[in-house]
Image 1 (cartoon, rainbow, N blue to C red):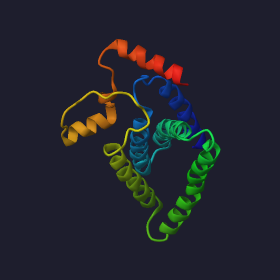
Image 2: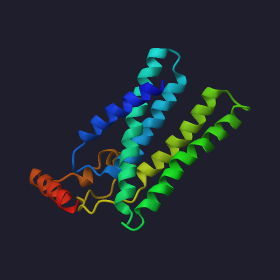
Image 3: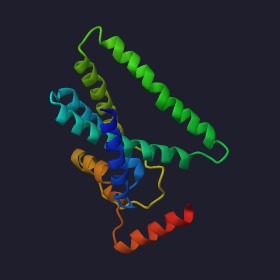
Image 4: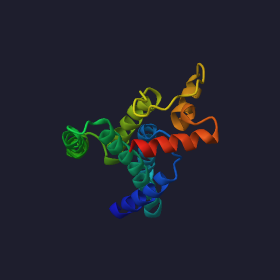
Length: 185
């Protein structure tokens, strides 16, 4: 089962390379975590091994699609003098948080079944990530945004998924933004 997640992360790395250059990677973090949580909820309902393994492959893919941009964002936002400290705190939060989640899940299994504990924890993750998906601060990229006007709830949801305001209006802008990225690195 763990190797299925690993295979999914390899597929996620290939998928990450297919995302257009103009798409802001920090939008990908909550979006991928929402899909990861939804796929995890499907896993908690699965009863056949083949379906469970395919769901785990998909979850590994979306786990990588959230983990890679968050690591990149932390490295880009940290100053050179503090980058090591920032990454160690990030690693502590990621790797240190998992045992706490496992302990919490173990405690909850005294009061409900394991599938319901999984559903509760993934449902909580989904609610939190949907809120991050709809309300976020795009401070990472300094790209000029197109003016979209006042958006409805569904318009905000579509913008959260597609990052349409970041999409260049003309193909020439894509080349200019790619050139800016290369010179800034």
